[in-house]
Length: 367
Image 1 (cartoon, rainbow, N blue to C red):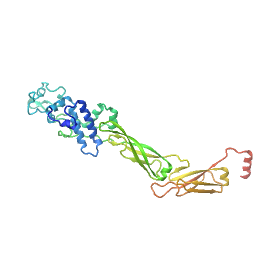
Image 2 (cartoon, one colour):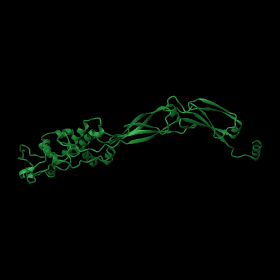
Image 3 (cartoon, one colour):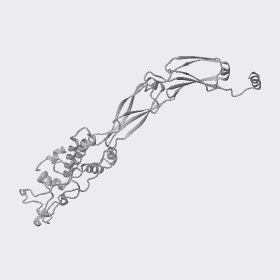
Image 4 (cartoon, rainbow, N blue to C red):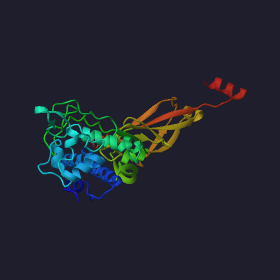
């Protein structure tokens, strides 16, 4: 029969729970209430401390035995003798305080004992709990979950408590729901990382503007600390005229890590086009001409990216590498709605690979 069940209740287990049950219950509660997973819940930090402190006592067989027999208040008093003798007769630790070794094996360091006033036993004013963050990290590193899971969820070292005041002298006391004191400072939460992914788009998509649906996989942790992978569909808005290299950010949609979830950034890439190339806000189309056409004249019908037809008629000669520009038929200017760049037609002259002696002579006579 245990004196009280407060610590068991905080882990949602019965007083008959095994050591393995205690550890599993702590892992579940710690992951559920960790402050980094509950930034919008002001009560989470306190619940995280409570489950950590409950686990610290119940996971140690000697401490658990003392708690079951005398309750939490006895522990928080630093082991001060209870007002009434136990069923076994007298204070079970009196002989240990006097040097008789009656305290359960391994439990002597639980209290700060030593000669007090008048040569009698001295007890600490309170019990110093371990920093919840340190307990959390150490427990998960040593658990069956493995270090890979822990490192992926909570990377980056956290500060440990420095030596502080109190009769224990072993570490700074933290404020908690059980006793008085101060919580040691936590290291700043690491910045959430950003993952970048390419987003290839056709020139038509960049011209017209579209909404792309992108299916992504992200890794999360459930309340039991298991790594799970979920599929999520994101709708990525593409503004007309968006340029290669533009970045579209989604906050908190990536893998779960310490500090929150990763941000995801899509980087716009431009797919090659069969007819056009892009030069800033201009669209460039190249017309191939035979040498004869370039010299004597030619006609072409060219279609723009939005389907308009341009009828080009040149009497010649047409210089290799020359071009004509048609304003307002290029790409939309993303920062200036309603405006467009130019449609540029460049001319490429194909020279013959070989000429016969007769052709060469005729060209000499003509030119």
